[in-house]
Length: 110
Length: 112
Image 1 (cartoon, one colour):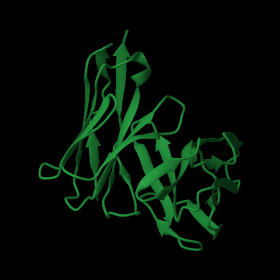
Image 2 (tube, chains in turn purple, orange; image 1 turned 90 degrees about the horizontal axis):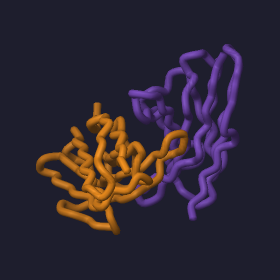
Image 3 (cartoon, rainbow over the protein chains, first blue to last red; image 1 turned 60 degrees about the vertical axis):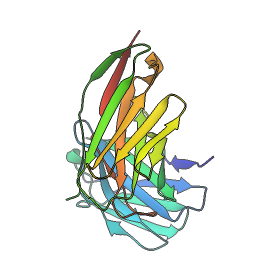
């Protein structure tokens, strides 16, 4: 079974902090994605990556950056956390078009 | 902007009935289509995918695709209370191994 693991299930951070969300997949997938999910807005793509050191902006990249130094790991970085970044963050990886999700990180910025 | 639209619901059906979930998409070049189920507080899990026009059946689930009408649906036969969840339609606009666009989801409630 494909396993996508996110480093934290719940996080509480203060406004202005730099926040790192980590995601690791164990199936050698080339494609990895970061989404956020908010009530009424659905899943929105923040960034995605097709390969190591490659990244592409999604629909809402502002305030975020990503890092992919190894194929299995895709990190989402909030440079200076703000309250409007309070959300559920979902990492996914894919091969042959099917996406597999991690368990999600519920981030609260206070 | 490539879009995927779904009725947000909630859609309520009695136990044992057929639940019909619908999805439309804007990009005519879309190649592959997915249905995910998401329980409250959990991450989405893949139920079915379909690439070709017509029907695809898997147990109690049937996905239907009509590319000319840019329409994909999911039928759940013999609905059970455990099917109560939000169902997300996802479209891969650029084909093999690329990005996904998700609809907002339809909340299904199966009443005992």
